[in-house]
Every structure is written in C-alpha cells, then in structure tokens.
Image (cartoon, rainbow, N blue to C red; front, side):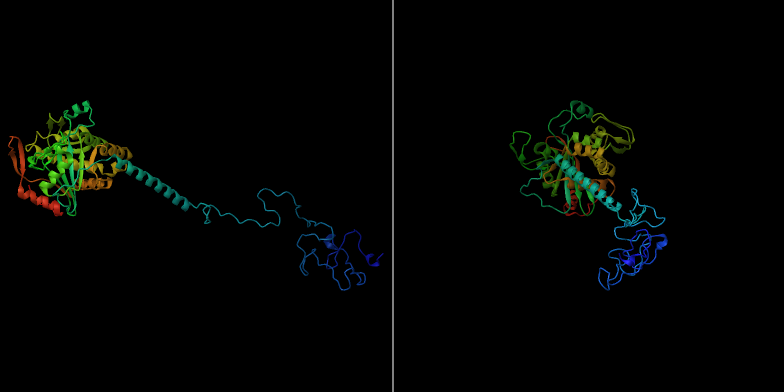
Length: 443
C-alpha cells in the first residue's frame, strides 16, 4: 500500500485532474492539498504533469467556469450552489447554452418581409393593367366585328387623286331594315322597301379646322354611267338627275363616284346608317339634348315639340332630322337641323360618361356599329377620329356649311323641283376641301 495516500481526506472523492492540488468538492472546495506523486511512482513517467483542471482539452491558466462542478474521473458535473436544476425547456424558451435567435422587428420596422407592401402594390397594379389590356383587346375585336364593310370606294377611270386631310362621305338612308311594322307606324317612316338617301354630308378633317358640308339631295348634277343594282343589272348610261338618284340606283359606290366627279374631292372613308341604326344610337346614349326656338307640329314626321330645350329619344330624333315642312327653305332648313343634331349626337357619344360606362358603351357599339355600313378600309380607330372631329365641330372648333346654291328653284325637264349649285362659290369650297385650306364663308 502506497504511503502517500494516507494523508487524503475521507469522502472517497477523487481529485484527479485538478492542477492546484485543491480538493474536488466540499464547502468552498476546501479539501486539503494532495501532495504530488513521487516521480518514481508516476505512471506517466518522470517529469509528467497532471492534466489541467477542467477535464480533457482545458488550457492551463483558465479558471473553471462559474458554477461548474469539477470534472473528475467518471463523476458527472454538479450544479453550482443556488443554481436552478435543469428541466424541460418551455415552448419558445432558449435552452441553456444555446445562441438566442435575432429579435424580430417591431411593427412598422424597416426589415423586409418576404412580400413587401411595395411589391404587393406593384403586383396588384400589374394584374389590373393586364386585366384591362385583355378586356380592351377583346372589346376592340368584338366591336370591329360589328362593322359591316362594303366595297364602296372602288377605283374607276378618272377618279380624283387623294388630297390633303381626310374626307368622309356620311349618308343617312331611309332603309327600314330592322324595324317592325309597329315601329314603322310610330316613326311615320312608311313601308317602302329598299333604301334611298335621306341626307348626305362631307366631313373634312384637316390642319385648318374640321368642316361639315351638307349636300342637298335634290342637287341637279351629272350622274356617271353605271350598273342598275336595283333592277336587272343592266348598264344605265350617263345622265343628269337629282343626286339622290345615284344612291337609289347604284348604292354607295355610285354615290361616291357621283360626289367625286362633281366636286373633285377624293372620298377617303364612307359611312352609311339607316333609320333603325340611327334610333338605336340615340337611345343607347340616353337621348340627345336639342333646343328649338318655336313650337313644331309636323304631321308627316310625327314630331310635336314645344319651344325650348328637350332631351329627344330615338324616335323623336328621327322625326327631328326628317321634318322640313315648317321651314321657309324646306330642304335647306332640314339640312341645318341635321348638321346641328349630328354634331350634338357625336358630342354625346364621344363623352367620357358614355365611353367609360359599360351600360352605355356596349349598347352604343351593338346598336350603332351593328347597323353601320363602312368602306373596306375603315376601322375603329378611323371611326374614333370621325367622332372626335364631329365633337370638335359641336364644341365650336370647326364649322358647318352647305354647298353654295345658285338656283334653289330649278325646274327639271320632267317638271320636278330641283336646285343647282353656284359654279364659282361651290368651286371655292371644294378646292379648300381638296387642298386643306381654310374654307371660305360663302352662301
């Protein structure tokens, strides 16, 4: 038995691993210092040192961790006096010795979440823009499909070359297509079949202002040779007659050729609408406001209005643009009403209240474009320019004129009443349309 162990304090605790010779446990660690082994008895050999305190891997000179028990051979670590014994870790608590996670920013902080608010706004805006784009494209093609295209601007020998600006030929026909018998009675349209021109206007859109010019339907003019589209298709030789007979016998193509050959104005676009389409457009925009300076009671058109301002529905509007018997100059007075009404209608149809309201826009497109006949090259963008030009005329940025008349009481060889243009004044107006120069104030 080794005599060096006789001085160890009782308790059986091992002090192996302590570098200061202090006892491994006891109050304050106050066990007596243990003498080192004689070199001859040291199993590590002469000169070997004891392991530093703290167990394997501890570095010399470092004090023990506060509250930690000495690490002896096979003896588990004991909690420091007053320490809370280890137990189950509560949810959300940080285990002893673990690195706590970074604190989350308070509400309104500057840290970027996964979907920042700005990004959400951008995504929502892109989604809305995409939906509007899809809706707009779909609406465009739907509306464009409503147009009825006809080859009314066919080429022919001697056709005037295109001039400056854009010229529209606008034709209001007396076609009863789409009207029931009850509607024909209510509108006083009669029951005639086919279609005849009820009004003709040329709209010039140019750099010197827009001008709307009415062409009297009883104008006595030369009519080119043509095929009779309402009969057996035979060729009808050139003749002189009322200008509306060109539309009656040859439709839009012959009317365009007759207008161009008599005025020298190249027609770029053609638009034609019948009674049913006219009434539908007016009703779809909620009526048109018109003011009259005296009472109107016209048995032929069925119009009955008191002096003052009124919102005319489709049926009343049709009667308004057709009535003429209470006017001293008959057809010329009726053309002034037509110009006034068409400008007011275009202003109403092109207003944001109409175009941005689906309950007025879609009925307007359906009822108006569904009965509108245009040339093959006319699209929705062209019609948009047309309505904006008409709106400008109504707003005072354009003017309205009538082909200057030389003889309003001309008697045709067959005894019919007609009128003849003033050759000098009318040429001045026609040249202004062709060259896009200011239209002179002539009567």
